[in-house]
Length: 162
Image (cartoon, rainbow, N blue to C red; front, side, top):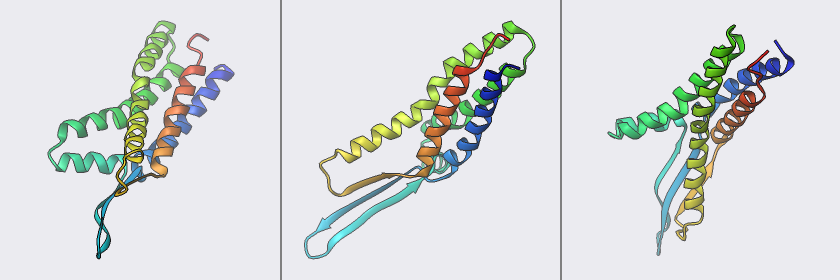
């Protein structure tokens, strides 16, 4: 195995280390409130969600399609990508390695989609003229972002042909 592939292997394993807290730790918190004369500030709704909590909440609230899409692109695709990258590293046939690596390149784009969506959501909330809406990113977002970037780096430096 080449030095590049050894580094790629380490990065794949490291990306999986970041993926778990990225899925389980709080990613975003939303606080919706109102300022009422005499009563002052009142919180109407407050929630902090991880990716897995979000999937569960959406499913319980009959938003199974959205829950399924988040499950597919945030959980299944990243795990499938890591497994395929490991197969690329250890497969014996060059043709198979090349095909698997090309497939990973196609599905890799979807991992960053979650980071983009959360970023757009936060930007929309932050630029809202409503003072009553507060949104904050938490460590889960940064772990998931780290997973995405490390995983992309691993697939980019990997040598398919040894």
